[in-house]
Amino acid sequence: MTKVFSGIRPSGKLHLGNYLGAIKNWLALSEAEGIEQAIFAVVDYHGITTPFDPKKYHEQVMDVVLDYLAAGVDPDKALLIRQSKVPQHTELAWIFNTITPVSWLDRLPTYKEQLAKSPKYNHMGLLDYPVLMAADILVYKSNLVPVGEDQMPHIDLTNEIGKKFNSMFGETFEPVKAHMAPGARIMSLKDPLKKMSKTSDEGIALSDSPVEIKKKIMSATTDSGKEVLYDEQKKPGISNLMEIYALLDPKIKNLKQIETMYAGKSYAEFKADLAEVVIETLKPFQMKYNELKADPGHVIEILERSEERARKLSSATLNEVKKKIGLE
Ligand code: TYM
Image (cartoon, rainbow, N blue to C red; front, top):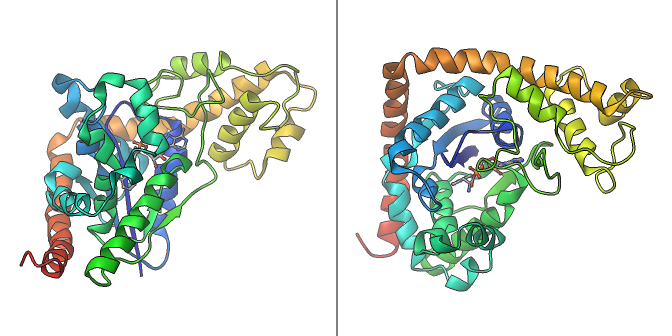
């Protein structure tokens, strides 16, 4: 039986990488046959492990909730929760803390990257981030986690923690699998060797206006040469743009088709068409977002209903865990 869980940090506006690498992937999964449970979270406790503005934070959390719903998460098929409203996540994380060696955490690339970005933010929460992520997943006994490629080390760690718990206290958690879609690694428009991220303006936010989208795509870094050809090594800029095009336009079956369409044409022609594809894709999303924003009561109702159910589901696991370790 498949139980899906995934989460997004409210650390900035969601971008095309989040949509293609995660949300689009989840939507397909939550519609698939044989899914017993799907839970999507705004991981607001994870979001405070890196610099944030407390005055804007609440709005940022709600903004991600709106993004989820506008992108098509159906609250009748999936639970949509704020992590901090389900304290069972942090409770299980504490228990996992007592069995996770520090050496499993301080070697992780995500920890090192964040530390390099904000050296003053070297605190326990940042180091412990992946343990809370393991708890997010295992507190629902989820076994399928749709994520982008950058999250793989965290999924491996989740499995290490689950295995260690089982060996110390008896069989409780089954292995977790990451589910990765073709958009699992969308790169920055300015530096195609870096992944698109929420904290820089090098990506396309789902809320960007047509003018902004056009400007960003037309000025995206492309490579030497003029031909629209896919070559991740030699032409990472144009290759990233081609991938975005292929993932967004249902008429495109493969990257070869794009090469054929743009044979003898310039990068500028290709980019202008890509901008149109992105603008058209985001139009219905943005309309839905604005509708939802105008009805905050409805959104809160969805969240509270989901969170109540999530507390029930996660309590069952937490009680089992507490019994196994002798707390109850
Ligand atoms: P976050 O907020 O950094 O990213 C959310 C999701 O978007 C994916 N993603 C990308 N995919 C493709 N190309 C990109 N450029 C790109 N940038 C981001 C991420 O891989 C992720 O799937 N640790 C998680 C949040 C989390 C979580 C969880 C996820 C907390 N608990 C439990 C799954 C299960 C994170 O930082 O996501």
